[in-house]
Length: 146
Image (cartoon, rainbow, N blue to C red; front, side, top):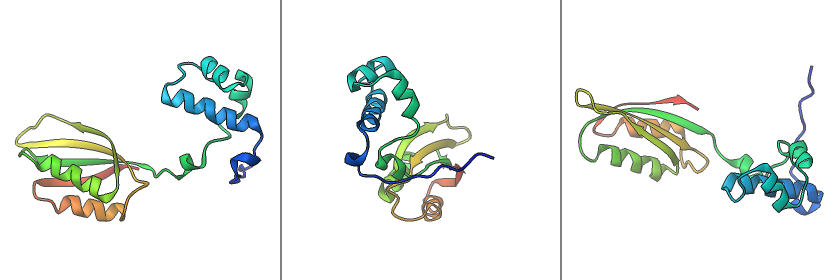
């Protein structure tokens, strides 16, 4: 049976330089400042083997604080302003909208899928769902995944 890993929160200055450089290489890749691992490791001053050895083992603390991503499915009446109002509910709740996908209206209704990141949520997900479902023009709102 595999041993469960231990985790520590350590001030960056106490870490060996290689860990800070691996984090920098990952940042370069994630932001698009480097297009390849070769480029990111060269810019960070580390070898590719060091990058691959530690890339999954070290990350900035704020990455671990992100809330989870939740997928909502909504059935809305096809009337002007309803989607805008619902999106404002997400924003006002502190949820960070990642994607919005709306199907073509059929029989006066449209299915909308919204993916949100919840680290800044002011209340609970249940409160948000209740608020959405209590909105005029929303026929159904539910959490699909998350």
